[in-house]
Image (cartoon, rainbow, N blue to C red; front, side, top):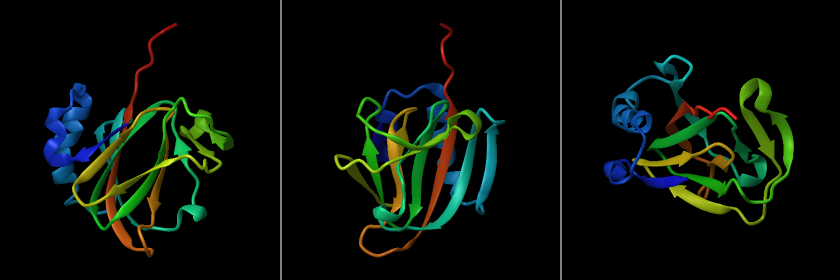
Length: 154
């Protein structure tokens, strides 16, 4: 997981795909909600308007094939986080058809507080619970970019 402000992304040693995504975020932030291809189904962005909700009303998720770049444009959002190696239990598995699995809420999850301009990168297997409230439910606008991670043979 990487958690930082967009102004500082260049200090991270990111692969070329992620560097490209970071440079596109300000332009994507001007677009209407929807899905935008960057490199077909290999890299694409979703501009989203959402209302945050209490963590007790959502479930953590993880992916197997795609990493998530979550970038907050406006509002304030809490995202729960648990490393890939942590003990967790799948509650609903859609990895084969939609590359998402939902998990029971772990008590030991860390909390990331996102403010406008901040981003978080979640790698496959890392639990994240986005769109949670910081205080009361509030409107947020964010971009989620999905980047396919090529698996090595073997």
